[in-house]
Amino acid sequence: MIPRRPEPELMLEPEQARAYADADFAAPHEGFVDAFAEAFPGPVTGPVLDLGCGPGDVSLRFAAHYPACEVDGLDGAPAMLAAGDALMAGHPAAPRVHLAEGCLPEARGPRAPYATIISNSLLHHLHEPAVLWQTIVRDGAAGAAVFVMDLRRPDSEQTVKALVAEYAADDPDVLRRDFEHSLRAAFTPDEVRAQLADAGLDDFAVRATSDRHMIIFGHLPEAT
Ligand SMILES: C[S@@+](CC[C@H](N)C(=O)[O-])C[C@H]1O[C@@H](n2cnc3c(N)ncnc32)[C@H](O)[C@@H]1O
Image 1 (cartoon, rainbow, N blue to C red):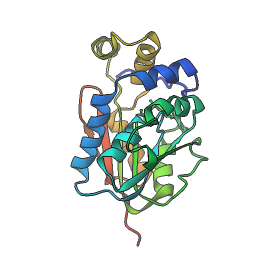
Image 2: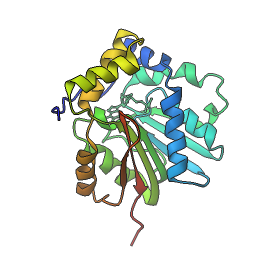
Image 3: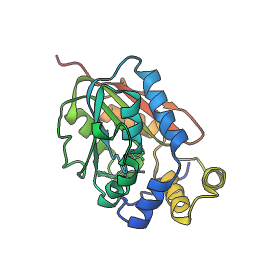
Image 4: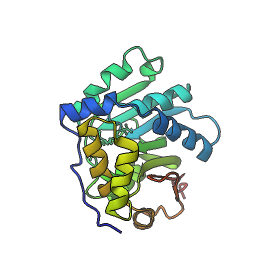
């Protein structure tokens, strides 16, 4: 297994943010919503918190799928939030999506406690991964549905290069570089299980869903 190599937490460069917002993430982001729906069948109503929302593509797709919810997105990078303006413009779900600047762990979801918390591709950015799980415990309601998707770290440099060649060969340089760095910064499912145990979230499921993704989901403990 290659050692974890953290990357910068916030995606602050305007060029990086624009390339990210312009990229076609339809397949993984629709896959995020489908996998949520499979993990938590039934309607989603009320406020949802999207941690590390970036330009808001997942927030919008989630809100479009669940017309009775509103999504509050939080991200610490102004450039990423600004890059989302074009995605928001004219999108039918945009009036129910509210993105705000805020850096974890200091920032709080504005309508906490939330009955639903989602997060895509934030965990591998965090230098201290406990920040994600502690934020979820802090801002989630008792019994809240929690769904996180992220990359998993490959076991060899050859696999890193092969995944970059397979999925990012035609991407702009900045995106290809970010993908490669993100793969090296990602956690393994076993590392995530240890993080969950430390956070008192041992009941959460951790599942590999593709050659590079994993999902992590479960309900927060009910109040006693
Ligand atoms: C790879 S992007 C994912 C964006 C979005 N969730 C998506 O799926 O398109 C990761 C995002 O997490 C944000 N981020 C990283 N560390 C953060 C922190 N400590 N607090 C808030 N946002 C953070 C970055 O600025 C970046 O926008």
